[in-house]
Image (cartoon, rainbow over all chains, first blue to last red; front, side):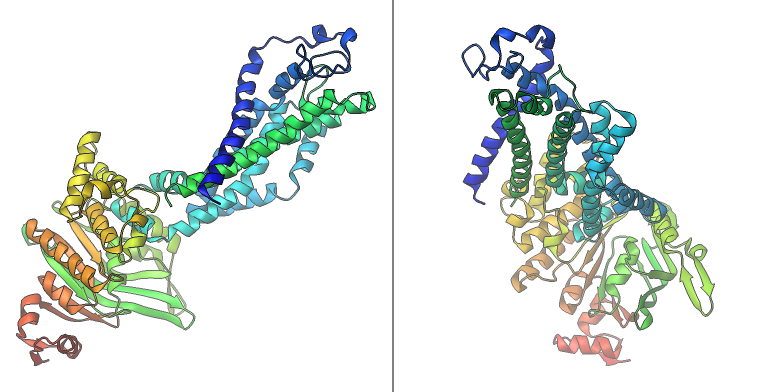
Length: 273
Length: 298
């Protein structure tokens, strides 16, 4: 991939990511009362100057609900991305460096977590606990730890016999510094960027799936992109505006985050090459 | 009293590896001393055990069971530290073979070596291209080393010192090299950088393990000249490992010749150069192959 394409891709996906971040940050400060927003005189209006994304079946402004809908996944997504990356990197580093029971224990735990598909775990947890989105995000983060840790562990193991790592040891650098700085930060940073954006996208996907299915996730009248799309079923095809914008937002956000993570990682890799 | 003690004293070092054909002894009862300020050359072909001996001194022998006997004493201040003093504790007898608790041994070695690595000794390895961190600029690596040696130094002083070190290893345009990544440099420049990184750490003993292997002939000569210049600038204790007798004789005060895991000869470089005294067959062969006087046969 050429430098030009890389930069164009980064700018395009980065714009969407920046927009989502911006909206996610300001959304909690925007006052919104879903009960007051109901206006049966203005049901299912197309986009106009007054309602740029139109209105839904109860006359509520769709743009406002798309904006407020970010609260359903934004902070939980960031939390899960940070937690999964941190735990994955550390447990991978420990498993790659340690010997004996510690290594066996970490690898065994990872394999145990990896026995079932992720969504099955999440639905199981939902069925048993009827949890908040934060608990779901926490579970999602834990479910991503094994895949991150495995990548990191293999890297640590491979680098352990590299001459330059041996040289670092011979110069007297502490193992913690070699692991955290030379291996995790310098060598694994692109991988971790990729994984973090992936986990964020996954939390959005899970929130959408749960809200769409309806029993778990965000409940009406509070908005989530998932339950907004779910309203198509009740409208029976009466209007596309209530669900078209959140649907586009879902697709655009997930793909922009994945693309941005990938391209940023690639740019990071190519910086020194 | 300490003036008489050697900086490094290796006695009866034994290193073994388990192979598919059984246990193989790659270093067999190797002994030598290195006095403070002395340059000791270790000469031998590949498989002679010279690199393994070096790695044992560094506490970096990889492979099982590894070091199986002997002592490696380092002079730290007034005190001699035996790097292998706990070896007997991890060896046990199983039938007719001696087994080693590798994990326990690695932990012991690591704990003992951590305060010694860098401060007492460090190494310049072969393959200069692989010995530098590919993701750090050369300057940052020299600076890392300086910071470890002199933790109280201010950041701008560290940066200035790094450029100074790059200059001392005779790097052209040290300022530019400071900001370059290893892949942007030639093999010879990488080795110069590696020498700067190692010396900036201020080790009492510098170990150069075949530092010219894999370099072009002219570049090899330049690196050897650099070592010579650095030794003339400041007397350093150094182990110089090579398979090239000319390099070793040019740099070393004293030479040990290894073959098949054993020391076949220990002699001063002067005597070897001038053909004085009696020679072991293998040394005589190396000398004559290099068109040097072989002296009398042993």
